[in-house]
Length: 418
Image 1 (tube, rainbow, N blue to C red):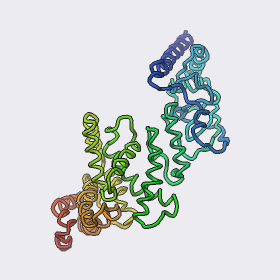
Image 2: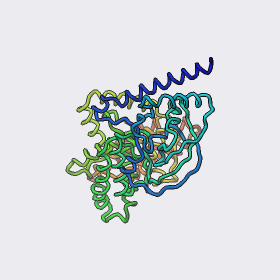
Image 3: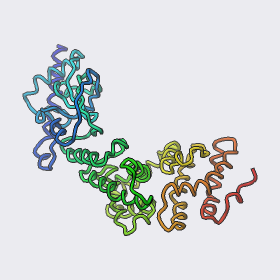
Image 4: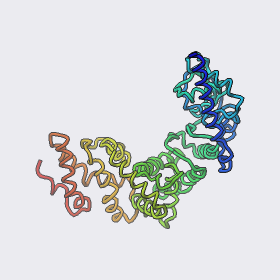
Protein backbone atom coordinates (compact mmCIF):
# COMPACT_ATOMS: atom_id res chain seq x y z
CA UNK A 1 0.00 0.00 0.00
CA UNK A 2 2.77 2.42 0.97
CA UNK A 3 4.66 1.53 -2.20
CA UNK A 4 1.58 2.30 -4.32
CA UNK A 5 1.09 5.69 -2.58
CA UNK A 6 4.70 6.64 -3.25
CA UNK A 7 4.41 5.60 -6.89
CA UNK A 8 1.25 7.65 -7.31
CA UNK A 9 3.11 10.64 -5.86
CA UNK A 10 5.80 10.11 -8.51
CA UNK A 11 3.13 10.04 -11.22
CA UNK A 12 1.64 13.27 -9.86
CA UNK A 13 5.12 14.82 -9.82
CA UNK A 14 5.60 13.96 -13.49
CA UNK A 15 2.21 15.41 -14.38
CA UNK A 16 3.18 18.67 -12.67
CA UNK A 17 6.62 19.08 -14.27
CA UNK A 18 5.36 17.92 -17.69
CA UNK A 19 2.70 20.64 -17.55
CA UNK A 20 5.36 23.22 -16.63
CA UNK A 21 7.64 22.08 -19.43
CA UNK A 22 4.89 22.28 -22.05
CA UNK A 23 3.74 25.68 -20.78
CA UNK A 24 7.26 27.13 -20.92
CA UNK A 25 7.70 26.02 -24.54
CA UNK A 26 4.19 26.61 -25.87
CA UNK A 27 3.11 28.50 -28.99
CA UNK A 28 2.85 31.81 -27.12
CA UNK A 29 6.50 31.69 -26.08
CA UNK A 30 7.52 30.99 -29.68
CA UNK A 31 5.36 33.86 -30.97
CA UNK A 32 7.15 36.11 -28.47
CA UNK A 33 10.48 35.03 -29.95
CA UNK A 34 11.49 32.91 -26.96
CA UNK A 35 13.02 29.48 -27.47
CA UNK A 36 12.70 27.91 -24.02
CA UNK A 37 13.83 24.42 -24.90
CA UNK A 38 16.94 23.22 -23.11
CA UNK A 39 20.28 24.59 -24.27
CA UNK A 40 22.59 22.16 -26.08
CA UNK A 41 26.35 21.92 -25.90
CA UNK A 42 26.60 22.02 -29.70
CA UNK A 43 24.85 25.40 -29.79
CA UNK A 44 27.22 26.80 -27.17
CA UNK A 45 30.33 25.47 -28.92
CA UNK A 46 29.19 27.21 -32.11
CA UNK A 47 29.00 30.51 -30.19
CA UNK A 48 32.42 30.35 -28.46
CA UNK A 49 36.01 29.36 -29.14
CA UNK A 50 36.73 26.49 -26.72
CA UNK A 51 40.06 25.00 -25.79
CA UNK A 52 41.11 21.42 -25.18
CA UNK A 53 39.21 18.64 -23.44
CA UNK A 54 40.26 16.77 -20.28
CA UNK A 55 38.84 14.37 -17.71
CA UNK A 56 38.05 15.56 -14.17
CA UNK A 57 36.89 12.15 -12.96
CA UNK A 58 33.98 11.41 -10.63
CA UNK A 59 32.83 14.27 -8.41
CA UNK A 60 29.76 15.81 -6.82
CA UNK A 61 28.47 18.78 -8.77
CA UNK A 62 25.77 21.32 -7.97
CA UNK A 63 22.48 20.53 -9.68
CA UNK A 64 21.78 24.24 -10.23
CA UNK A 65 24.95 24.46 -12.37
CA UNK A 66 23.56 21.95 -14.89
CA UNK A 67 22.10 24.16 -17.61
CA UNK A 68 22.01 22.02 -20.73
CA UNK A 69 22.25 18.76 -22.63
CA UNK A 70 24.84 17.41 -25.02
CA UNK A 71 22.22 16.70 -27.69
CA UNK A 72 18.64 16.24 -26.40
CA UNK A 73 17.55 19.80 -27.02
CA UNK A 74 13.96 18.98 -27.85
CA UNK A 75 13.08 16.67 -24.93
CA UNK A 76 13.27 19.12 -22.03
CA UNK A 77 12.52 22.73 -21.26
CA UNK A 78 15.27 25.11 -20.12
CA UNK A 79 14.50 24.14 -16.49
CA UNK A 80 14.89 20.43 -17.33
CA UNK A 81 11.14 19.81 -17.25
CA UNK A 82 10.15 16.91 -19.58
CA UNK A 83 8.25 17.89 -22.75
CA UNK A 84 7.31 14.47 -24.17
CA UNK A 85 4.45 12.33 -22.80
CA UNK A 86 6.34 9.09 -23.57
CA UNK A 87 8.92 10.08 -20.92
CA UNK A 88 6.39 9.45 -18.12
CA UNK A 89 7.26 5.81 -17.41
CA UNK A 90 11.01 6.19 -17.00
CA UNK A 91 10.76 9.59 -15.28
CA UNK A 92 8.25 8.26 -12.74
CA UNK A 93 10.37 5.20 -11.97
CA UNK A 94 13.49 7.29 -11.45
CA UNK A 95 11.56 9.77 -9.27
CA UNK A 96 10.34 6.88 -7.12
CA UNK A 97 13.86 5.42 -6.73
CA UNK A 98 15.58 8.76 -6.07
CA UNK A 99 12.93 9.77 -3.54
CA UNK A 100 13.67 6.50 -1.74
CA UNK A 101 17.42 7.12 -1.94
CA UNK A 102 18.02 3.87 -3.82
CA UNK A 103 19.44 5.31 -7.06
CA UNK A 104 22.94 6.77 -6.86
CA UNK A 105 24.45 5.90 -10.25
CA UNK A 106 26.68 8.71 -11.53
CA UNK A 107 25.52 10.75 -14.50
CA UNK A 108 27.91 11.84 -17.26
CA UNK A 109 28.45 15.52 -18.08
CA UNK A 110 30.63 17.99 -19.93
CA UNK A 111 31.86 21.04 -18.00
CA UNK A 112 32.25 24.31 -19.90
CA UNK A 113 32.73 27.70 -18.28
CA UNK A 114 31.74 26.38 -14.85
CA UNK A 115 28.40 24.97 -16.08
CA UNK A 116 27.43 21.41 -17.00
CA UNK A 117 25.83 19.76 -20.02
CA UNK A 118 24.39 16.27 -19.60
CA UNK A 119 25.71 13.48 -21.77
CA UNK A 120 23.95 10.64 -19.98
CA UNK A 121 21.43 10.84 -17.12
CA UNK A 122 18.91 13.44 -18.30
CA UNK A 123 16.00 11.90 -16.41
CA UNK A 124 18.03 11.77 -13.19
CA UNK A 125 18.91 15.45 -13.56
CA UNK A 126 15.29 16.33 -14.29
CA UNK A 127 14.13 14.48 -11.19
CA UNK A 128 16.96 15.93 -9.07
CA UNK A 129 15.85 19.44 -9.99
CA UNK A 130 12.20 18.57 -9.33
CA UNK A 131 12.84 17.20 -5.83
CA UNK A 132 15.30 19.93 -4.86
CA UNK A 133 18.54 17.95 -4.76
CA UNK A 134 21.57 20.21 -4.21
CA UNK A 135 24.32 17.86 -5.44
CA UNK A 136 24.49 14.93 -7.81
CA UNK A 137 27.40 12.58 -8.56
CA UNK A 138 28.81 12.91 -12.06
CA UNK A 139 31.65 11.75 -14.27
CA UNK A 140 32.98 15.04 -15.64
CA UNK A 141 34.84 15.87 -18.82
CA UNK A 142 35.98 19.48 -19.02
CA UNK A 143 36.23 21.69 -22.12
CA UNK A 144 38.51 24.68 -21.50
CA UNK A 145 37.08 28.20 -21.69
CA UNK A 146 38.86 31.33 -20.38
CA UNK A 147 35.75 32.75 -18.72
CA UNK A 148 32.56 31.58 -17.02
CA UNK A 149 29.09 30.98 -18.44
CA UNK A 150 26.24 32.64 -16.52
CA UNK A 151 23.80 30.38 -14.67
CA UNK A 152 20.80 31.88 -16.49
CA UNK A 153 22.25 31.26 -19.96
CA UNK A 154 19.70 29.66 -22.27
CA UNK A 155 19.05 29.57 -26.01
CA UNK A 156 17.81 33.16 -25.92
CA UNK A 157 21.15 34.32 -24.45
CA UNK A 158 23.42 32.70 -27.04
CA UNK A 159 23.96 35.99 -28.88
CA UNK A 160 25.10 37.58 -25.61
CA UNK A 161 27.48 34.67 -24.98
CA UNK A 162 28.87 34.95 -28.51
CA UNK A 163 29.41 38.68 -27.93
CA UNK A 164 31.30 37.94 -24.73
CA UNK A 165 33.54 35.46 -26.52
CA UNK A 166 34.29 37.90 -29.35
CA UNK A 167 34.98 40.68 -26.81
CA UNK A 168 37.53 38.54 -24.98
CA UNK A 169 39.20 37.43 -28.21
CA UNK A 170 39.68 41.10 -29.20
CA UNK A 171 40.73 42.52 -25.81
CA UNK A 172 42.00 39.61 -23.70
CA UNK A 173 39.99 41.23 -20.88
CA UNK A 174 39.46 38.11 -18.80
CA UNK A 175 43.17 37.46 -18.51
CA UNK A 176 43.33 40.63 -16.35
CA UNK A 177 39.86 41.14 -14.87
CA UNK A 178 37.45 38.50 -13.57
CA UNK A 179 34.55 38.01 -15.95
CA UNK A 180 32.18 37.98 -12.93
CA UNK A 181 32.71 41.75 -12.83
CA UNK A 182 30.60 42.05 -15.98
CA UNK A 183 26.84 41.56 -15.74
CA UNK A 184 25.26 41.69 -19.19
CA UNK A 185 21.79 41.00 -20.57
CA UNK A 186 21.88 42.89 -23.89
CA UNK A 187 23.62 41.55 -26.98
CA UNK A 188 25.14 44.88 -28.11
CA UNK A 189 26.76 45.64 -24.74
CA UNK A 190 29.90 43.62 -25.50
CA UNK A 191 30.50 45.37 -28.84
CA UNK A 192 30.10 48.76 -27.15
CA UNK A 193 32.54 47.74 -24.41
CA UNK A 194 35.05 46.77 -27.07
CA UNK A 195 34.65 50.16 -28.72
CA UNK A 196 34.92 51.93 -25.35
CA UNK A 197 38.20 50.19 -24.51
CA UNK A 198 39.86 49.99 -27.91
CA UNK A 199 38.77 53.41 -29.18
CA UNK A 200 37.54 55.95 -26.61
CA UNK A 201 39.66 54.78 -23.69
CA UNK A 202 42.78 54.38 -25.80
CA UNK A 203 42.43 57.98 -26.97
CA UNK A 204 41.84 59.06 -23.36
CA UNK A 205 44.98 57.19 -22.24
CA UNK A 206 47.06 58.99 -24.88
CA UNK A 207 45.64 62.40 -23.87
CA UNK A 208 46.30 61.74 -20.19
CA UNK A 209 49.79 60.24 -20.38
CA UNK A 210 51.04 61.62 -23.69
CA UNK A 211 51.96 58.16 -25.00
CA UNK A 212 50.54 54.91 -26.26
CA UNK A 213 49.83 52.24 -23.61
CA UNK A 214 52.70 49.79 -23.31
CA UNK A 215 50.33 46.85 -23.50
CA UNK A 216 46.66 45.97 -23.54
CA UNK A 217 47.07 44.90 -19.92
CA UNK A 218 48.21 48.38 -18.90
CA UNK A 219 45.33 50.01 -20.72
CA UNK A 220 42.68 47.58 -19.43
CA UNK A 221 43.77 47.55 -15.79
CA UNK A 222 43.86 51.36 -15.74
CA UNK A 223 40.42 51.56 -17.35
CA UNK A 224 39.02 49.01 -14.92
CA UNK A 225 40.50 50.62 -11.82
CA UNK A 226 39.87 54.28 -12.65
CA UNK A 227 36.56 54.12 -14.50
CA UNK A 228 34.72 50.82 -14.70
CA UNK A 229 35.00 49.75 -11.06
CA UNK A 230 34.01 53.19 -9.75
CA UNK A 231 31.12 53.54 -12.18
CA UNK A 232 29.84 50.05 -11.32
CA UNK A 233 30.02 50.87 -7.61
CA UNK A 234 27.89 53.92 -8.29
CA UNK A 235 25.41 52.00 -10.44
CA UNK A 236 25.06 49.25 -7.85
CA UNK A 237 25.02 51.53 -4.81
CA UNK A 238 22.32 53.73 -6.38
CA UNK A 239 20.28 50.88 -7.91
CA UNK A 240 20.41 52.46 -11.38
CA UNK A 241 19.37 49.22 -13.09
CA UNK A 242 15.83 50.01 -11.93
CA UNK A 243 15.82 52.91 -14.39
CA UNK A 244 16.43 50.43 -17.22
CA UNK A 245 14.05 47.44 -17.15
CA UNK A 246 15.64 44.42 -18.83
CA UNK A 247 19.18 45.76 -18.32
CA UNK A 248 21.85 44.46 -16.01
CA UNK A 249 24.46 46.70 -14.40
CA UNK A 250 27.09 46.52 -17.17
CA UNK A 251 24.38 47.33 -19.71
CA UNK A 252 23.65 50.48 -17.69
CA UNK A 253 27.36 51.30 -17.63
CA UNK A 254 27.43 51.21 -21.45
CA UNK A 255 24.43 53.55 -21.62
CA UNK A 256 26.25 55.88 -19.23
CA UNK A 257 29.43 55.88 -21.33
CA UNK A 258 27.46 56.55 -24.50
CA UNK A 259 25.84 59.49 -22.75
CA UNK A 260 29.23 60.78 -21.55
CA UNK A 261 30.87 60.45 -24.95
CA UNK A 262 28.02 62.49 -26.42
CA UNK A 263 29.43 65.69 -24.88
CA UNK A 264 31.69 67.87 -27.02
CA UNK A 265 34.44 67.76 -24.39
CA UNK A 266 33.84 64.65 -22.26
CA UNK A 267 37.20 65.04 -20.48
CA UNK A 268 36.00 68.35 -19.05
CA UNK A 269 32.99 66.74 -17.36
CA UNK A 270 33.69 65.43 -13.86
CA UNK A 271 32.44 61.90 -13.32
CA UNK A 272 30.15 62.94 -10.45
CA UNK A 273 28.50 65.63 -12.60
CA UNK A 274 28.02 63.13 -15.40
CA UNK A 275 26.33 60.70 -12.99
CA UNK A 276 23.85 63.35 -11.88
CA UNK A 277 23.01 64.46 -15.42
CA UNK A 278 22.65 60.87 -16.59
CA UNK A 279 20.25 59.96 -13.77
CA UNK A 280 18.25 63.18 -14.24
CA UNK A 281 17.77 62.57 -17.97
CA UNK A 282 16.58 58.97 -17.59
CA UNK A 283 14.39 59.79 -14.60
CA UNK A 284 12.48 62.22 -16.80
CA UNK A 285 12.20 59.68 -19.62
CA UNK A 286 10.80 56.94 -17.37
CA UNK A 287 9.06 58.43 -14.29
CA UNK A 288 7.62 55.12 -13.01
CA UNK A 289 11.02 53.41 -13.15
CA UNK A 290 12.52 56.52 -11.50
CA UNK A 291 10.09 56.15 -8.59
CA UNK A 292 11.07 52.50 -8.13
CA UNK A 293 14.73 53.48 -8.42
CA UNK A 294 14.46 56.12 -5.71
CA UNK A 295 12.68 53.75 -3.35
CA UNK A 296 15.20 50.99 -3.97
CA UNK A 297 18.09 53.40 -3.51
CA UNK A 298 16.63 54.67 -0.23
CA UNK A 299 16.22 51.21 1.26
CA UNK A 300 19.63 50.04 0.01
CA UNK A 301 21.36 52.99 1.66
CA UNK A 302 19.28 52.50 4.81
CA UNK A 303 20.48 48.90 5.03
CA UNK A 304 24.11 49.77 4.31
CA UNK A 305 26.38 48.89 7.20
CA UNK A 306 29.40 50.96 8.32
CA UNK A 307 31.60 48.20 6.86
CA UNK A 308 29.83 48.56 3.51
CA UNK A 309 30.40 52.33 3.62
CA UNK A 310 34.07 51.78 4.43
CA UNK A 311 34.64 49.29 1.58
CA UNK A 312 32.90 51.53 -0.94
CA UNK A 313 34.96 54.52 0.12
CA UNK A 314 38.24 52.58 -0.14
CA UNK A 315 37.42 51.36 -3.67
CA UNK A 316 36.47 54.81 -4.93
CA UNK A 317 39.26 56.78 -3.24
CA UNK A 318 42.03 54.21 -3.94
CA UNK A 319 43.43 55.07 -0.50
CA UNK A 320 45.00 51.60 0.01
CA UNK A 321 47.10 52.08 -3.16
CA UNK A 322 47.88 55.77 -2.82
CA UNK A 323 48.38 56.02 0.96
CA UNK A 324 48.74 52.55 2.50
CA UNK A 325 49.79 54.08 5.83
CA UNK A 326 46.78 56.40 6.05
CA UNK A 327 45.29 56.85 9.54
CA UNK A 328 41.88 55.19 9.46
CA UNK A 329 38.95 56.31 11.55
CA UNK A 330 36.66 53.76 13.25
CA UNK A 331 33.99 52.14 11.10
CA UNK A 332 31.16 53.95 12.83
CA UNK A 333 27.86 54.83 11.09
CA UNK A 334 28.07 57.81 8.76
CA UNK A 335 31.84 58.36 8.92
CA UNK A 336 32.89 56.91 5.59
CA UNK A 337 29.67 57.90 3.88
CA UNK A 338 30.65 61.48 4.77
CA UNK A 339 34.20 60.91 3.48
CA UNK A 340 32.78 59.63 0.20
CA UNK A 341 30.52 62.67 -0.12
CA UNK A 342 33.40 65.02 0.69
CA UNK A 343 35.59 63.42 -1.95
CA UNK A 344 33.21 63.29 -4.91
CA UNK A 345 31.29 66.43 -3.92
CA UNK A 346 32.97 69.68 -2.85
CA UNK A 347 36.54 68.45 -3.36
CA UNK A 348 35.76 67.61 -6.99
CA UNK A 349 34.22 71.06 -7.53
CA UNK A 350 37.23 72.83 -6.03
CA UNK A 351 39.75 70.86 -8.05
CA UNK A 352 37.82 71.18 -11.29
CA UNK A 353 37.72 74.96 -10.91
CA UNK A 354 41.46 75.00 -10.20
CA UNK A 355 42.49 72.69 -13.07
CA UNK A 356 39.98 73.87 -15.64
CA UNK A 357 39.14 70.25 -16.44
CA UNK A 358 37.63 67.17 -14.84
CA UNK A 359 40.00 65.84 -12.14
CA UNK A 360 41.32 62.30 -11.98
CA UNK A 361 40.48 60.29 -8.90
CA UNK A 362 44.07 60.20 -7.65
CA UNK A 363 44.18 64.01 -7.86
CA UNK A 364 40.96 64.27 -5.85
CA UNK A 365 42.21 61.92 -3.19
CA UNK A 366 45.56 63.72 -2.95
CA UNK A 367 43.96 67.12 -2.33
CA UNK A 368 41.33 65.83 0.11
CA UNK A 369 43.79 63.64 1.98
CA UNK A 370 46.55 66.19 2.57
CA UNK A 371 44.49 69.35 2.92
CA UNK A 372 41.79 67.97 5.18
CA UNK A 373 41.53 64.28 6.05
CA UNK A 374 44.97 63.31 7.36
CA UNK A 375 45.41 66.16 9.89
CA UNK A 376 41.76 65.95 10.97
CA UNK A 377 41.89 62.17 11.38
CA UNK A 378 45.10 62.33 13.41
CA UNK A 379 43.49 64.92 15.66
CA UNK A 380 40.29 62.88 16.16
CA UNK A 381 42.23 59.69 16.84
CA UNK A 382 43.66 61.28 20.00
CA UNK A 383 40.29 60.61 21.65
CA UNK A 384 39.98 57.39 23.61
CA UNK A 385 36.91 55.58 22.29
CA UNK A 386 35.86 54.89 18.69
CA UNK A 387 32.54 56.69 19.23
CA UNK A 388 34.34 59.80 20.52
CA UNK A 389 36.73 59.72 17.57
CA UNK A 390 34.00 59.34 14.95
CA UNK A 391 31.69 61.81 16.67
CA UNK A 392 34.41 64.45 16.76
CA UNK A 393 35.21 63.92 13.07
CA UNK A 394 31.55 64.32 12.11
CA UNK A 395 31.12 67.49 14.20
CA UNK A 396 34.34 69.11 13.01
CA UNK A 397 33.56 68.24 9.39
CA UNK A 398 30.14 69.86 9.49
CA UNK A 399 31.74 73.12 10.59
CA UNK A 400 35.14 73.20 8.96
CA UNK A 401 35.33 70.95 5.88
CA UNK A 402 34.11 73.53 3.33
CA UNK A 403 36.35 76.40 4.57
CA UNK A 404 39.39 74.10 4.67
CA UNK A 405 38.90 72.35 1.32
CA UNK A 406 38.17 75.64 -0.48
CA UNK A 407 41.34 77.14 1.02
CA UNK A 408 39.69 79.96 3.00
CA UNK A 409 41.00 78.45 6.25
CA UNK A 410 44.09 76.41 7.00
CA UNK A 411 43.39 73.24 8.93
CA UNK A 412 46.15 73.94 11.45
CA UNK A 413 44.39 77.18 12.41
CA UNK A 414 41.24 75.38 13.50
CA UNK A 415 42.75 72.40 15.32
CA UNK A 416 43.28 73.01 19.05
CA UNK A 417 46.71 72.42 20.46
CA UNK A 418 47.01 68.70 21.06
